[in-house]
Length: 511
Ligand SMILES: [Zn+2]
Image 1 (cartoon, rainbow, N blue to C red):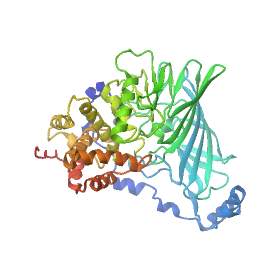
Image 2: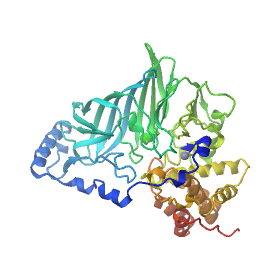
Image 3: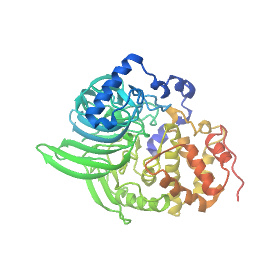
Image 4: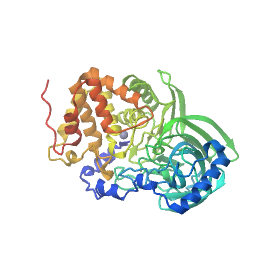
């Protein structure tokens, strides 16, 4: 995600916003612990286990009949355990695939959808949750059988007719509809985000917690899945999503676009941006398919999104390792109210932000954030610090400015008393998880690492990191461990200082 220049100017105090969040420990105490979910009600459980055994026998034959006690049954947790967002994601299952079919009426803003999730139970489930907010559910089926459900705030709780045994794959189909509204609050620089109406359609950018405003999901980066996304919009409009366009056809007054993302994707990186677009397709000089959609209402000639996206994709493939997805691209929309751009998978969405740095930043996120994703939001500097460092690398590659010079400028801009230095990148807190420190102090940390271990080790480390954790999830400690392994140096003090010290770190002696 990148902040627009105009918002950068408008919001000088981002870093000094006081946090009113409970401490991590108190959040932890309030979270339903995974262990606590193992409790079994004695009598009811036996009945459920019997039901499950019967269900298992019907569904999959006697070989998979769970024996009572082997696979305890119970409700899935309402959240995946992220201290910043206790309700995001869900416990008890792992989503493998989303099949989304959404119809959007730009005139009224109404969305009607049908989502089928294929998931694997990681425990025996008598009930489970999905994340869905603002929209009303009409019906739910689990494995083709009608299921009872309740909606409470952003949680959809589903009670399948038959419990789902541990280890089993199951499908959940939700029919739903309503008028999606964007979220707001301090997290995304004070901007609105999510499903945002535009003059000719919708601009959809959901980091970190707005995927559930347009489809039922397990809305957390640690539960990635593949996606089929069908978008139905009035004929004449173009609907752009992630992965590759499989087919598009008109049916009466409606155009249906079918997109498929075959690589794992976090729900917040899904988009269904709709509007009038000029589309340019082809391949980058390096051979990667590229799809760029540009709103014709925008002034032309400012920035060559197609050429720049192609060049950045090819260049980062040299520096960071092979491009992790099937297609690259961009969606350039006229949405000034979105004060940011977002690295939606394979095709970042750009709104008010249209400059070269932003493009190379969002393309770099395809490696850092989208393929290599955080396991908990508190490690988000692994996304933003790296994408910001990519902007510095780009300037160096173009011969404009060394990364050392960019580092010094960023460092000198923040005086020792600046609250910028009070943000601990190992735990930046929810409302300030996208503060400037996460971007620029993160990038500074990488420059200090590079100067400590040398270019050779540093440029071995980056592709090794993206290869080891391709399509996976990571924590900061894993990056430090890999940097130490690659360089053979003890880097605990360097990372401790540059990520977490509450005072502006001293500059290392010039070499
Ligand atoms: Zn970013």
